[in-house]
Image (cartoon, rainbow, N blue to C red; front, side):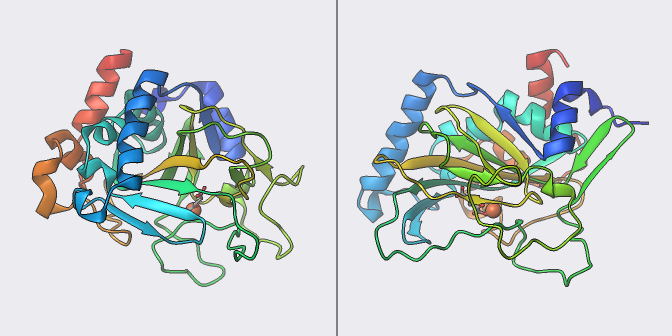
Length: 282
Ligand SMILES: O=C(O)CCC(=O)C(=O)O
Ligand SMILES: [Fe+2]
């Protein structure tokens, strides 16, 4: 028998996610809300470091990417986004009603300059521990049975700027189920019929199994690519602390009780899930 949360996704959504490993939700963030989010992000991108409220952390990883980590501790807009009913509906529908947020950051990606190293490569997310070939990472699992999907490790890619075709974010549909080694020659980008990029409008959200082969596609526009990443995992078992370790107790007073609970391990239904069910009458 399925869990009591099997009905959160529509049959069409289950079919698509099972086949391809991702869902594209359109227009999740309305323009006015998007404007408020961009105002906060723009400020943190240009402010002097001491003006950025800890534990929000601005840093550069790849040559053309700037990250802002733990943004939900710096502004309630991002807490609202982590518990957004539309996002929680899908995330809870894929985790038997038990999502735990374990990572949230913003990324700005500029067009690479000539000579910048090409660091793009398809990958699956993990916490820094690579299971030897032949083993399946039990923390990043995908199964479907009894009319329900169980995906224990998920990410969202929230577009804050339009993403034209052929650029932005690339993935290999269906690879969340692949049990074979990835060919070395597989390059990140739009190489049909194996790999795709996903055109998105600002305010759209892509939710994907992080077992899906994915990476940033080269950015070709003259404005920056801007997105928010949220990562969720199955709340009942796993405490993913490899990427900063949420919740951050030292800054607990900067987030709501609901956010703190969403970031914590639990086997109970979380307030964000209850609120989402009321919101949609599910
Ligand atoms: O920036 C992107 O679009 C992909 C980044 C990514 O996959 C990661 O950080 O694990
Ligand atoms: Fe990734």
